[in-house]
Length: 485
Length: 149
Image (cartoon, rainbow over all chains, first blue to last red; front, side):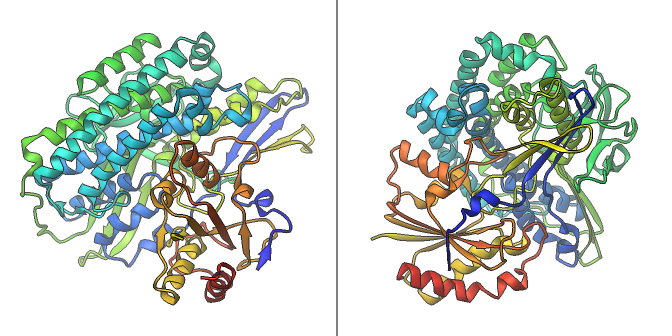
């Protein structure tokens, strides 16, 4: 065995890389983000029974297993042409709401929080989850952990496991909810609503009452006037689990509204030679490069996008929070990337309220939980809003249900073009005349952390984080500075 | 002393699952051991490790110039972020540990972390590469010896 002679942590591979190219005057001309991507999922899946996919796809993503499980299960509904029972749809959505509430709150406190609660210019050593806990106090920190525990218990009750659920079947779910379990879920929902209110209050106190932060959120450096995409219900209200995909233009006007089965008419993918990442864009607008505006097909997904495409929330407290966000930020749509954090909190509150609402629904304990499929499978497409954006699973099979084709449009891929634009815009604003300040790394990270991007997050190697490296090249292509986190 | 062996990784990403496969072998050879296999990371570690006196983590690592199949024994301190920035997505092992301590949880006092150098963790596949897969039995034996299990 090799005892440490040279700390392997100092030479980790698999870095995310940001490359910044300066022009003659030393200003940023171009910047791009390169992240290791996973390969070969289609090949891995082909030849397997389609029914395996809801269990397999939970392993694709380290943070969105429930989203993949449900997108996959809905693709199976479509594949076998079977409509789930009303109770099954509610049970699925209940599980999903609990997942969302937990996921969003954790992101805000542990990942986004350091930028806001501790502060973007705070000493690096404090700008992490421990710094957040130090600032908000152990009590709030403990409550976040408690909420996480309770929501994961809901996932275990419904999904079979606290992560990587196994309950989804074509046409329904595998297990009904008992009255005792309902009580536990109601308590979790109540706890979640209270904690989300605390989190929004914290955002109010720490961010909105601090002019510097408000300027940062509303400033141009992190803003892009793009299209937005997200699922809405029949009244154009936000829905994570079901509905039609709505797209609004940079002025907030409806550009398209379609069923997921027609996604190929609306979404195309652009490739670049320097990355494996595929960049989604709106087919009917076209790819015009990494630029924003009405003429560019670049669109954004995830919390802010969902709020921008919707006419509101279906739950009362979340609707209040929604109204407050838009009145504070000057109406819809909001283009500031950092407002994703605020939108995430509005959604977290909605998810907690929806958990409570569904748990109290008389039908939630029904035993009518599955309709058996009778059709011969051929092709199925399913969609959900993953916390990180619109997620589509598309399967083709032979008549026995063995997979012959798989296409996934994952949430982060839909944001990839915008993420690159945000990185470049931040670099252009922060690098002047060859001066590359050391603090630039966090300011650029802030640009893409707001999206909560999901790059190769299913990989797991130590130390449990994705190292990031920024390389700056001068006009001659010579490396002039390297920053590593 | 209450001991937990935590095998970490993703078993559909080629070598990424090596920690889980080694943990599996440890359980086969020493059925009395408490072994948990997980593909979770970050804060979720606290779900597993709180309440144990001793923790042995088996995971993968990918370094420049590393020899696939090589085994490292790391200290928890070695995993501390070098410049303390938050990660893209999760909370790293060392931070999760410190968080648990600050929240007053009963954290393991003895921690050993074994990391296997891997070759490929970006291609979907259920089998490890030959270089890594061929070392699994040997590594399991090494850990048993080193930890006197």
